[in-house]
Image (cartoon, rainbow, N blue to C red; front, side, top):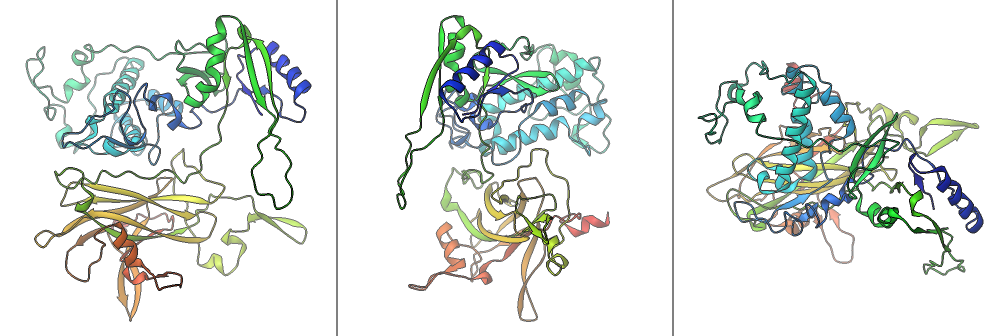
Length: 532
C-alpha cells in the first residue's frame, strides 16, 4: 500500500501512520509527503461529474443524471464517447489564455492555441452528440460548458482592463463587427438582433453574473464542497478540482468524520498466499490491517490511480445519415488499412548491451540496424501536450468518415504497435450506403493519438502490381459491381478475410482500396499545400 498525503496533512498523523505501519505491516511502502502531483485528475472519466448525481454517462447512451433520457431534434438518444479524442481544459491552458496579451492573439485565426481551439478540444473529448454543430446543444453538457467558456472570456477581459475592442481579423466575412449574429432573436434592451460587435460589449455581459471559481491553499484545503478536492499544481500553486468518484468512495468517510470522532484506515500489505507448482488458481488471502486515527487530524488524502492504457474504449456511433433517425442499415462499411512508422520521440525500456556497453537505443529502434534505418526514417512533427505513450506499445489511430453530400460522420479506431519500426492494422469505416440514383461522397481522414494526421493513399494498378499512391482522401462510392464496400460490418470483414475450412483465414489485400500512411513527415498530408 502507498498513501500519497497532501502537504496540508499533519505531521502528527504522518508519524502515527508510520508507527502503525511499521508495527503491523512490515515490508510495505511507507507514506510520504507529495507536493508535486499533477493538476489534472488521474483519470478524468472517473470524475463525479459523469455520474447519475450530475451529468450522467460519459460513454454510450446517456440514460442517467440531469441529461438522462434526452433526445435530439431527430428523436435520437444523446450519446457520448468520452476520452477517445481531444482533451480537457487544464490549469496550464487557463493560465496561458489569461496571459494572452491582445484580443487578436486570443481569437481565430492564429498559429497558437486560442480560446476557440481549446474549446473545440473539449467537444472532441466528450464526443458523440457534442461533435456535431447542429446537434451539440441537445446534450445538456453543451450549456454548462459554454457557460464556463463565457466565464473564462470574462476573466480575460477583466484582467485586461475589460477590453471591449473588436479584433481586426481580415477576410472573416460573416464574422465582421456589424454582421448580425446567426439564428439570434431580437434582444429587448437592444431593440434589434445583436451583431458580432455586441458580443464584445458590456450590455450583454452585464446580464450575466459569474461565481468566482473556488480556491484553496496549502494552509486551507477546504474547497467549500465535498465534491471538490484541493490539488497541488506544483510550485506552491493549489486549486480545486472535481473529486474522483473512486477517490471519494475511499476518502469520504474520513472527511465526513472530520467534525469529531475517530477514523479507521484499512490497508493491505499486498502479500498473496503461496501456491504450488501447476496451481493456476488465484489466491487472494493477503493480510489486511485496520488502525485508528483521530478524525481531527485528517485534512485531505490523495490516492493516485494507475493510468489507463491508451487502448481507449469502444466507439459508439449514432448512425445518422441525412435527416433520418439513427439507423445502421443506412450505412455501408469500407475496410481501411493503417500503416504506421514508429515516431522518433518514443523510447521503451528494452536496451541491449554490446561488448559490455549499454546501447542507447531500445531493441526495436531502427537506428540500431544499418539496413533498416535506410528505409524507416519518420519525421517528428509537433504533438498535443497531453499525448500519451503506453509501455505496451499499443497506439491508437483514429479513422473518420465525414459526409460530403450527406449529413453524417462515423469514427472508429485501429491499434498499431508503437514499438515496432513498421506496423499495420485493418479497420472498418462506415459511409452512407449509396443507391442507384445517389452515389456517396465522403472525406476519410486518419490521425494518431497525438493529433498528427496520416497521409491518405488509394489503390492503383501499376505495371501489373497493386500500389497505394497519394490521394486526397475524398472518395465517391457507387452501388456498381464489384462493390467496394460491405452492406454491413460482417460483409466488410469477409471481403478482406477469406475462410477456407480448417485452415487459418487468408487476408485479401486486393479488396482494401484505401490505406493511411502514418510516417510523421514534416510535410502537409496534401502535397499541393507544400508549394504555398
